[in-house]
Each structure stands twice: as structure tokens, then as C-alpha cells.
Image 1 (cartoon, rainbow, N blue to C red):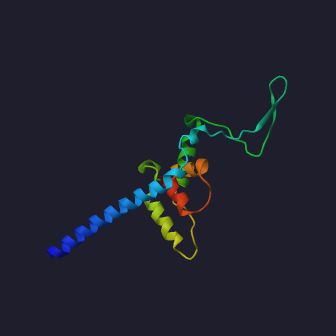
Image 2: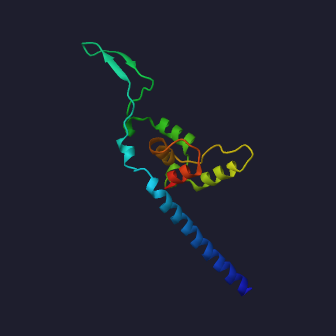
Image 3: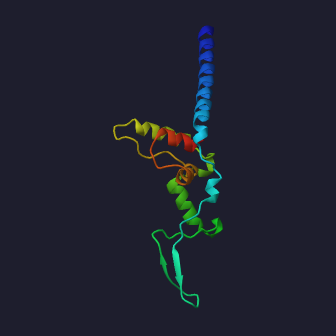
Length: 146
């Protein structure tokens, strides 16, 4: 019995060391191609062209995307809660990565229907939207995580 416990102990230690080496190796491999996170703050929203009369009355807005920046306090609480419920209901309970979501997504990818539902959190969606491509690849998902 003691030999089995020793064997399981060394297998566990070896597995942990191997997992750490894989994570570290993948980070060092992908690191040179990771974008700078500071670029998120520098992003500019595409704003519509506004046309005013001479006395300052708005007569029209032109452009395909009509966005207006808001401060966080100006967004109604029900909108915030609805967004969190739809996109990342555990937003306040993880550090930007939902491991259960990633595992669920990985299992879905093994199904005959293929990959759908990426398991990404709001934080990962922001990184993807501002810094990465929309390609559905494992490399892009790993970049989101890092």
C-alpha cells in the first residue's frame, strides 16, 4: 500500500511540474507576438459625422456606426446587470479567465457539431476586440488568456 501511495505522489508531482513547464513554454513561445495591453486605452471609437446649423442645432448624423462614449456611472444599473447576465454572469468571481467556461468550450469542440461558444469572459472579449483577430484558433484563445 505504501508503494502505491509513493507512486501516486511522484506521479502527481511529475504532472504538476510538467503542467508548469508546458504553461511556461507556451507563454515564452507566444510572448513575442502578444500585443501591448496599453493599446486598449488608446483605442478611438468611430464617431459619426455631426452636421450643425449656424446657430448650433444638430440637423443630422452620418456614418455607419453611431457610438458615443459614456462614463460608467451614466449607464443604468439594469443595463449593467443585463449585460453581465448575458455575457459573463461570474464576472466578479474570477480574475478574467473562466476555467469552467474554457473546459465547457473545449468539450463542445470535441462534439460532432464543432466549436461554438468560446468560453471567453468579458475581459477576454475586450482583449480580442481591441487587440486580436476574430480567428477561431487555439493560439488566439491562448493569447487572450495571457
